[in-house]
Structures are given as C-alpha cells and as structure tokens.
Length: 282
Image (cartoon, rainbow, N blue to C red; front, top):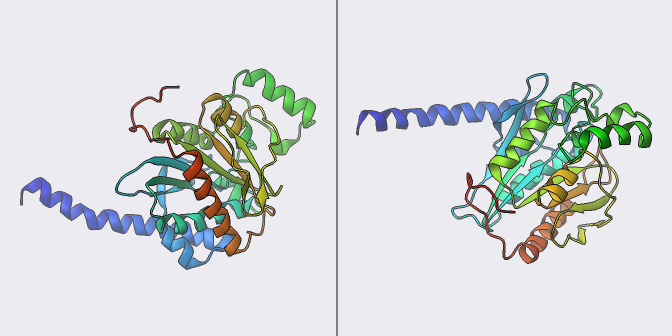
C-alpha cells in the first residue's frame, strides 16, 4: 500500500471517532431539551456539524441520508424558530424514517437552524440578535416591504423583527448558501403551532399530510417560502405542527412522512436532480 493510501486509511477511524463525538455532544443538548426525543433516537440520527454557526458560535448540525443513486434532493429544516421545539423533534424522527426508506432520494436534514433560540432559557423565536430568521431572506424589495410589514402589520412585534438587512444573520446566510450548494428539488420547513399545511412553489401542493390540511396563508416579506418557493422556484412545503412544545404521536409523525412520500412520488415523478455544482436552469 502506498504512503497516501496508508495515510487515508489511518484517517478513517479518526474521522469516525470525531463524528461520533460530535453526535454525542449534539444529543446531550437535544435529549435534554426536545420533547419526544429519546437518547437512542438522537444517537441513531448520527448528526454532524455543518458549515454553519449561530451568532453565539453554536454548531448547526446536519445529517445526509444518501442512497447509492439519487433521483431527487430534499432539504428538511427544523427549529428555524427556537421556541418551536416540536419542529426539531419531528426532524429527528424523520431522519430515522429516511434511513429505512428505499427511494432514490438524497435527504439533507438541518434539525435546528436556530440553536441559540432553541437553547435559550426560555427558548425564544428569534436568534441571539433578536431577528426572526423567517423574515430575513432576500425577497424582492425586501428593504421596503419587510420594514413596512413589520411596522404596520405587526406593530413592531419584536418576535417578528426582520433585521436590518436581508441575510444579516449567520443562520439565514448558512441556509441561503446551503440552498445554492445542495440545489434541492424540494424544501420542507417544519414549524408550529398553527396546525396547518402551507405551500409555496410552481407545482401542485400536497392537500394533506397526516391530520394537517392545506391552508395557504399567503406570503410574507423575507420568508423562506416567499424566497425559495415564489422567487427561486424551489417548492417549499411548510408544516405547521399543532403544538410548539409537544410533538404529534409517533404514529402521526409516521403518517405525515408517508403522505409526504406519496405526494412526492406523484408530483415529482418526472423531476430528476441536476448534478450539484451545475447551475439550475429556470
């Protein structure tokens, strides 16, 4: 064996050990904080540090479930609002389900995009700079529309402050860059607590996922659905769980997953993932 091959072989156990340590650190926090998340469930997720960090330098963990051949790429995001604890829990449950899924889908999970908000005591919607990440994406006319909406429609609700500029926050910049790197055919963003299903994008939306029925609530300046689904043509399914603090029962989590798979099989049947690194033609 050549020197380079020996060095590469020697590095594999070290990388595996580092990955296991990162997953254990994540589970120490998630198990203590999230509802309906057992230690075994979190360990099986095999979370890894992504390229992103929060305002306070916390790791933003990810997990890729990658089949031998890929037909679609799907990005699943939880915990964009830190006080919606159930959204991060459901993302972890779905990682387990994705691992047993035979479909040719490359899943990329970001269970807790806003770890500073999630691990605050009490947890809070915004990040450490007080910004609502779901109002910080660069939709057209953001400078005018986001400020107007916040001032006039929310009466300067601090929980919905869009920030000073689009992508001002490291967490939203990370997700924005991840969308460009990963080029998902579908984005699933998990929220709470309105108990509905929302959708933005150029394709036929799902009518229901489990007990959640489609109720398109409109678009907001700077939201992910507005930015990704309306202006970038990346369909965005927004799941609003019924409770921010309690997950649905496990059987309902599985039913939502099954309905998502069924809808994807019908609606995205003719879609083929383009090679990463090649710009999408829109």
